[in-house]
Amino acid sequence: MIDARCLACPLPVIQVQRAIEKNHPATLEVLVDNNPAVQNVTRFANHSGYTVTVKPLEDDEFSLTLTKA
Image 1 (tube, helix red, strand yellow):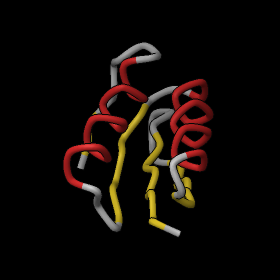
Image 2 (cartoon, helix red, strand yellow):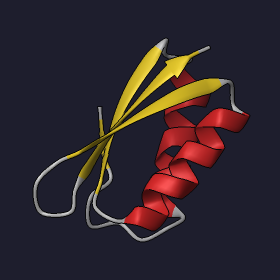
Image 3 (cartoon, helix red, strand yellow):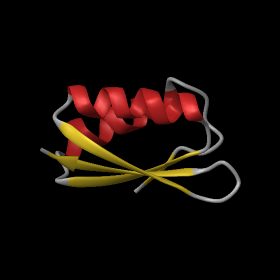
Image 4 (cartoon, one colour):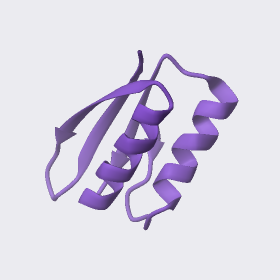
C-alpha cells in the first residue's frame, strides 16, 4: 500500500510509478487526499495497463485500488 496523503502532485504519481516498476504488482492500493491526485494516479495507472477503482473515504480522502488488466 502507498500512503500518498498530504503529498502534492506529482509525488503520488511518482510513488505509484516506482512501485509498479520495482514490484510489478497485480494489485496496488493507494491512499490520496485530493481530487487532482485521484485523476493523475488514475490516468497514469490506466496508461500502465491497470484498471482503477476509487472508493471515497472520510475527510476528503480516497482509496484507489489498481488492478492489472
